[in-house]
Length: 333
Image 1 (cartoon, rainbow, N blue to C red):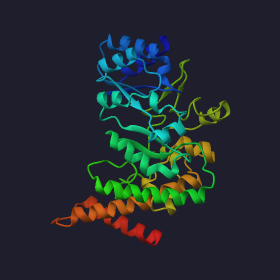
Image 2 (image 1 turned 90 degrees about the vertical axis):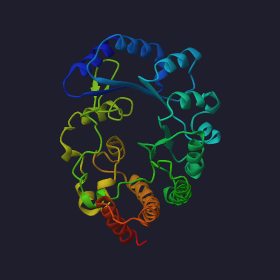
Image 3 (image 1 turned 90 degrees about the horizontal axis):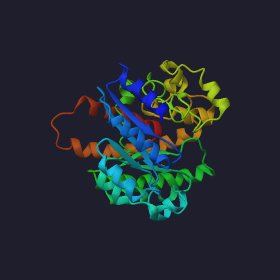
């Protein structure tokens, strides 16, 4: 408790940021619900000059009625996200038959704008579209759309064919339901032309993001912490200057791959799989290209409909059109 109080006070009283998000991570963070409650109620008893929000992501399986009551009472200042991988069959396969232990309506009722955390892995490759449709059918948004970090997929070539078919089914679905945001296919293709992101680090790890362990030790992010890495890896990580964006640029990809400005890989995943924070694994590179091919079709059809009766084209749309044309050439579409 005292460690949390010291750390939170330091961030809330420093002059660096006006908005602070304080998250609790695990494993399953709600195993320490009493501690979370005590930290929050201490925090709320104080006056702070910064904006704040508490959050956590849970598997939803151990929530009691008293816990639900507490979260519901404080839902404006504490956002609780749910990990849900899809249908009952998929979720039970991924997470030890736990689907029926989750009060799904509790999350939808209290945080309707909080996206579901859906994990894709080789266990549910053949049901990606069905699982996404199921989650949207419940009334939720979805965050991410990335495959599990730090793991390689067996029989990769064959599974890529399955993923491509699943993405095609999702493109059709999202085109029919354009009121839904697609975390899979809404890629900023115009950035491939502007190159604005090509020389930037793509996330806040080690800068505007930090993870503090129970003993007060600070790490750059969840992935670059004992949750995901061993002592030897963490010792090597200490040598990296996380404020120097040049350390996070793959110069070979930047020079040779047109898609590099929008290829947002996880640096922790890079390090885990390749030993280099800037270099994506061959599998993650291919998985991203599968997304690009589906997103190309999705974006092309949406843009065509948008511009069908337009009298002018915005600079962003013009860049997107050029990017799509170059992607056609790149993949011989």
